[in-house]
Image (tube, rainbow, N blue to C red; front, side):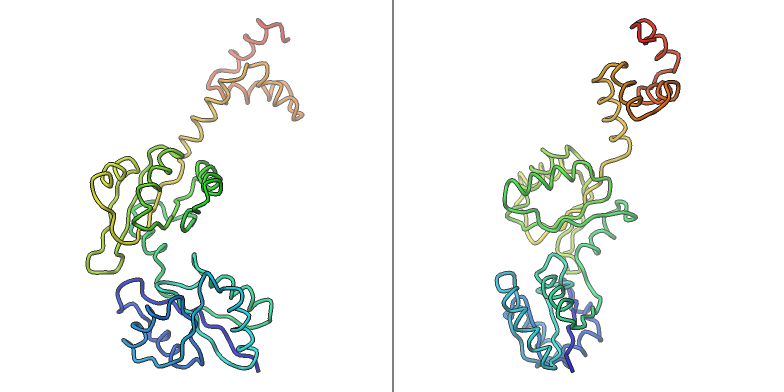
Length: 283
């Protein structure tokens, strides 16, 4: 009978956030796959867990997943842990889960800490709709493509960043998105936890004078409906009323309805549209 994969969330700072169920599971399984065994051994020792460990990380995720699946097919139960937080969130664990599905091996998740959700709940920004981008890519073209997408994103945006890249990321966000509300979170759940509601512009000014320390979660306000409306109004002003009318009529819209839509888009009356078109000899 095949074994099972257990995704075990570990604390992102405070060891008191380790759940009893995760401790029991890590003691029960045959093998623990860890992102960095040197970091994880301290966690395991703290809870008296003596289960054998093996490394599973970004640079061996394909080959090692195949080895782990072979072991699970042989009946072994495997737990996956990351350095901190929930495996498979911005983490190579997603590859192992996918390969388990393909191999018909059951995977289950033991919920616990996740830095992205912890920061979101503390941000003071909208939590109803959000998107998680993790770390922005180092590749310039890939980063530009993502930032171009984020320009249009109306949901709250969550990013991770290392301290030595924070200043450059703030600059890139400002260049792409302009100024936005931003909550910076660091040292989450630890003694010196810091949650700073600010703006991109003010954060840039702060870290021009101060050295960033610790891993950061950036929770960024999405594009407002007002911004969308202003951009649409600006775009309409860039074309003539005749062309504006033609766009709607090309969609099969009746002339009166097209006039009504054009008037609404441009913030003028339907009579104004009619008079303009008459003067332009369009009727």
